[in-house]
Length: 160
Image (cartoon, rainbow, N blue to C red):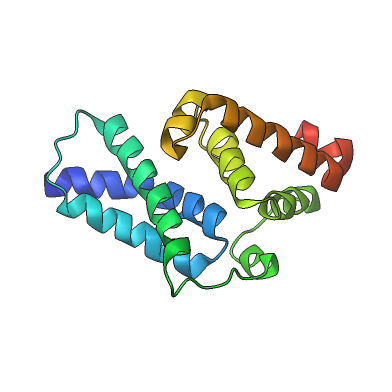
């Protein structure tokens, strides 16, 4: 990978990787660390990539694995309250803030499935491959997440 290809990949993926890690870890410091570790891993890799899409998928999978590794570490930190995460974002409306808080309150597996499906526009089969589970498991996580969101937000969130 050339320096120019690396810089393009970093610019294209930094924000997305950070949001995936933040969604999974719920801690902006850990999310920044994971994002940096993944980008450093890209720089050091000797893997030959076919195209930009291949790099993007590789980075996403690496990010998810690094997030999972964080929870295995004996130094794993507890998550921070959602209120501290809210300071990082600006919201168009109170409704957007409510949806964000509701999504962040979901269990980790549901939250990650929602993020990849709705925010990254990934198909269920691709999410299943990344999470190393069956597509039916992803569908179940999304179904449960929607059910939890409906309980938290009522019917208004569906229009968002």
